[in-house]
Image (cartoon, rainbow, N blue to C red; front, side, top):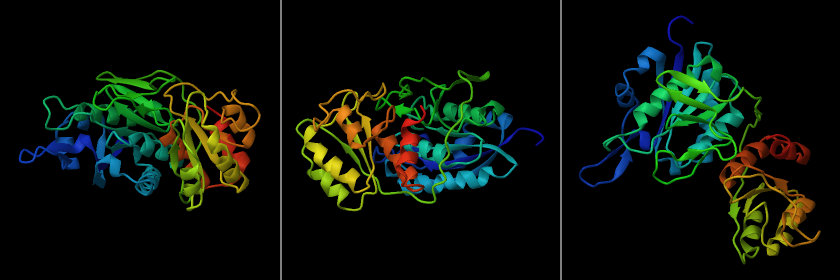
Length: 331
């Protein structure tokens, strides 16, 4: 390719494309892709851009089916040798889930940079235009190849597998607990902080039905049994601490695993890996007992990301050994 690299811009809505309605005071996603690009004329110096409107929604209304379709649209386009990478504008609430879906499904080694904003375009200092510039800069960087999908915000690029939103309103919200950002972005380019590592691509032709259950003290097993008896292909349980759940849930968990329904365990803690050491060798609900019952450890994944990964994984295989390797076999 001669000249600047060609980068595709997929738009899905979110705060980065939102403005405040002066009549009602409500903020909604109304800016077009063309309007976003007009705010950042410097983009033309970095890449040759093509626009691909996909959706215009607040990200809390992004469904797994939409995420799945977006990932396949990205993969199809990136098979074209003319493209060096892709950028996706997205809302902050669920971007970590959509980005992980893309990271798991896109077969191309070309980068996908998800870009967000915490301040809408009607505020005095919106962060979307600068974040968009950084995302295009990253997607156009040859060193980004092979690294999968990222979330770009506040002059940092975070790997889709590790990033999570940690603050409701502060622009410095996206963090990767235990891992930190993959790269820093600035007007001088992209500074990579670690070498490129291999990633797992899952050839899933469909998504499975997987609910996420957050545990709490004194919880009984009624909700688990309801979900398991109403079409769940698998389940992610968000426990506490190093990976523990109320002992009252153990009979339902054991029944599910006996019926061939995989259970993945995560923690409500933001940092740290699961440590299945507590228990009695029976039904205390400690991690030791859960592991003995056949529960799969989600380790550093948040509950919502564990759900996305299990939906994709079960869309590909029901083999327990393969599922366990996907979640436990590598960081």
